[in-house]
Structure formats: C-alpha cells, structure tokens
Image 1: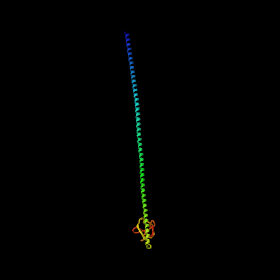
Image 2: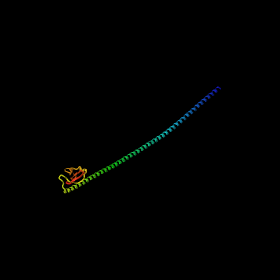
Image 3: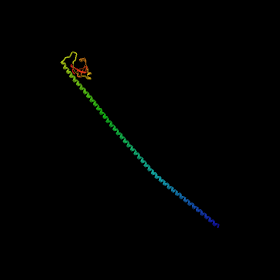
Image 4: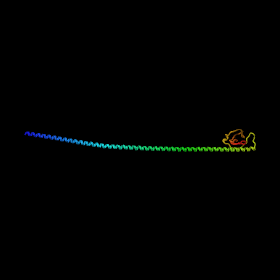
Length: 219
C-alpha cells in the first residue's frame, strides 16, 4: 500500500514537473514570438521612416532646385532690366549731347552770320562816308575852280591896289577849311590868313566865317 502511494506521488510529481516545463517552454515561445513581432514592427517602422526621410529629401531637393532656379531667373531678369535701363539712359544722354552740339553749332552759325551782317553794315557805312567825303571834296574843288575862274575874269576887269588881294566868291567855311595849310606870303584884305585849298586855290576866312577865294590863284 505504501509502495503504491509512493509510486502515485512520484508520478504526480513528474506530471507536475512536466507541466511546469511545458508551461515554461510555452511562455518562452510566446516571449520569443512577441520579441520577433516587436522586432518586425520596429524594422517596418524603421523602413517606413527611412522611406519617408528619402521621400522628404527628394522633395526638399526638388524644392531647393526650384528655389535656386527661381532666384537665378529673378536675378537674371533684374540684371536684364538694369542693363536695359542703363542702355536707355546712355542713349538719352547721347541724344542730348548730339542735340546740344547741334544747338551750339546753330547758335555759333547764327552769331557768325549776325557779326558778318554787322561788319558788312559798318563797311557799307564807311564806304558811304568815304564816298560822301569824296563827293564833298569834288564839289569843293569844283567850287574853288569856279571861283578861281570868276576871279580871273574879275581881275581882267579891274586892278587892285598894291599889296592887296581882291576877293571873288564867298561860301561857308568847313572845319577842314580852318585846318588847311597857311600861305605866309599872302594876306587877306583885312590881314586874314590865306590858306591853300586841296587843288592849290588860295582863300581866306572872313569874320562872318565865310571862305573867300582870291582871284589871283587857281584851285
């Protein structure tokens, strides 16, 4: 009886032991499976994160490339605009310089033409004055000659006293008549100075300011 009980106790103990081993093994398998699942999940998460990182990197690269291209295009457009503005400014400055040069040339030409007209007017005035002076001298010479001829005619008709010189014709004396050369060898009726005309005629100027040619001289 005791022997049977011992066998039953031994069998029960072994059964309990086997059950415990089986439970431990099952627990280990479950734990390993869980760890495997966790590892797989971690791997999947890592792969997913890596894939997302790669996708974001590509997206950022494209964005950076577009941004750089836009910036380069904007810079180029700005540079082109500035170059166009500078070219227009240079063209305007050149046009203004050309216009100023043309205006200066026109002003200089107008001034030269005006000065030429002034000189021509002065020359014409001078020629007219010279011509008038020549005409006046010719008239004076003609009058002197006429007076001399008249004096000669009168001299034939009458005789004057010794030391006196008869007068023939009077005319208003001019400033030039007062500056004519004086002939010291002759005197007028009242002791006036006797001058020599441009053609050689002799005359004196009386107190009335009249020029009187002497009948014994020729102009």
